[in-house]
Image 1: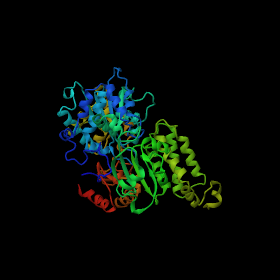
Image 2: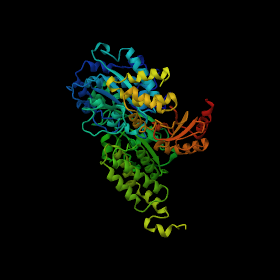
Image 3: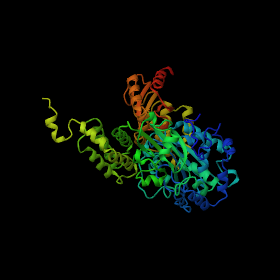
Image 4: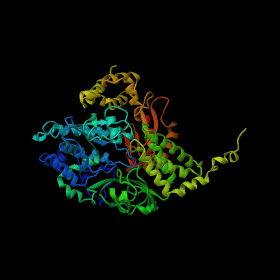
Length: 439
Length: 161
């Protein structure tokens, strides 16, 4: 059973097997053009595979939107060390719940994507790093991997091509930070999930300091259709420099929340109205988080825009991980800012000080404002603190905490001011005269 | 220390996934599966896991204290109720569910019932945003949870035993 009804506006490329009976089996996959892309890739040179991926304008689906073909081309092929394919299935950006479905309904597509990446960079082994909460997916994937091995789609000289490849699941145990690529690798090596200094990037020194391709689940899942359709045709599904389709996770105050596969560049307002059935209860739209909670918030007036990496960047936000969180007119934006900060403060690994202290102080100040004890300088203080954190942390978690905060305090300043005005003591200098001291 | 044959088989399977010189990679999954099997991670288990992957027990503890799903030294209840209150769930009633569960169970955040059966935790995003509010009881997801559905789930906790 599907989690939500599909929308007639969807373009089913990666999700084409969703809802097909027994979609996780090798037979079903093969019956639906499964492994056709692998066979095609096996007859190509590694350079030609990477070229095809470059032509597709596929950009990383984990959040950063880095061109995948270019990332693969950074792997030094002449390096004598073993090379690794690592899948980031540590889906934990608030608002994001798509990778789960890609694995649950079509694990073979992911495996095929990894195999093609293996061909492209000369890797023989892959790991799928799943967040610990997704235990049921470990079972689904382990079963799929065993089936693929038994059918000769994993192992030595796959289908007589002379290419050896195998992959394994790896369970995390609860840490948002492990979605950051270098922290993920530390965790995969059996350590605390703290980030590494970069460069060197994983392409050069990743897992066990060996060249490693590390991409999001959806990114790998895009690869088989790229090889099948051809890079150019796949690119044309989307907008210039933003190829293909994307899984958007609609959540919050919409009538039909759900995960929908839409062409890159689909209009955000149309997505909310026509795919999501509009704002719940006939209320007015107030704000949208366009790509997971680390993205700057858009006001309702800013939402008439195509959902692709470049358009969102122009709007000073990000397409991120595809988590579209819709907020209606009743939403308390101070509360939203506090909840988002509470999350990042909890998840900060504590490795670098600007992030560890910055998120803690921001949470404290936002708590004070929300609890009705805000000081008149607090809105400006929140803005200043968050701005000073931006770009000054070891890994992007600091930015992830700062960006939504800055946008909310800038765009909804009046709500912060209203909270502060209600506070009995808005200036600490008055504290002696306004608060009676008990003897 | 002796583990059950099932856990031993799981250990062998997990350690076998990594190159022999990198068996430390198995550490986090081993700890998680140990916790699931034994109900808790004991000091003895820490020693044993350390031996299996070739690190000092202190290094195991260092890792243990980092991951939010690993509970050490105090275990969570046999039925661990995890209620998400992160943004998508907050917008759709997750906080109210948490308050309701807290009152009904008489437990606060990360508290365990006196008999060790049930525990409650307010958790961060569990990846069920489009079907919010969502909760997890142990590894089982429950989506689009209403107050009535929550009551039903909580009432069922002790009946399962």
